[in-house]
Length: 287
Image (cartoon, rainbow, N blue to C red; front, side):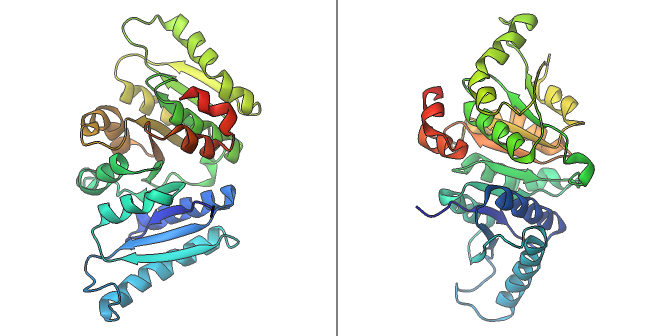
């Protein structure tokens, strides 16, 4: 089977170019191909060769230059699809290892989040990394990945993604869990550590810190994110009803985070989750 690519959405914005840089780095670390995808509903036909095609080609050329600067050794493909951004990006996740998209910061972020990012993250077939802000400087590269979980069992896919991310980047991981009403704080931290044993055993070099939050889970994650490089969250996945769930935690974090956020569908199959980790035998029983 051909390697599943890292896919990144390209739209000509500075934020999208940050997403391209992030995607190129991930492709380099994972030794996977990179696919630059541009949604161009303004094209008359797929083989349109007029000024509109020139606009699309210019966007992709600039994005390809950024990718080459970050990871010159990575095989890069460019794709232009004359369809709306949401459907193009969701369709692109069918054979992807990861989708990376940019979200504009500032007052307009809520519009972008509602019209594109939210639909893509809830419809994707693979993890989606949303890049926003500009906290991708070198001083954050050694910071830990922050994993927000409802429970280890429910968010096993997100746990896998977070541990693998920490291992690839050579950083630690901070796990934030907000207990339910029936859980005691002291017992909860010990229980989370115990449940993380399969992952920490596979990644013994990843330093793991468990923090127990209180109150609003979204606020608890954001409070810890000030010292994080990257946030990983789980979502129930590909169904319209998840909008309410994404709205309560993931949407809040996506809207306010200053660092990239990866949203991981809980509906990834055992085989797919195992492929992400590269060890199908150790991970399949966790699903």
